[in-house]
Image (cartoon, rainbow, N blue to C red; front, side, top):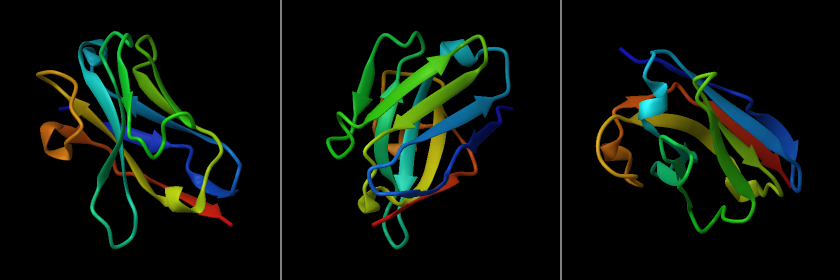
Length: 124
């Protein structure tokens, strides 16, 4: 069983920054692709970013490209999401997810394990 725990969310003014972390259990974290998704109130969960197991490849949603940066530290079993220039429309619960098999993916249904989420609120 794999457990994912997000942290780092909070309340920030527009234009500010936050850094989310997702710590995972298990000894094979370095073998898996990791993704970040978000879900705003009343909306469907949407893809934010994904990073390959070796951190060579990353993808971003167009809405966050140039503002968010995904990274990982395999020695610490942790994936990060640095969020800069935050906007009110970034307000959501942010989830990290782990994909055990296959290529990098942007669909939430392609991920096998999820964290409990961390709230990010951006005030205008």
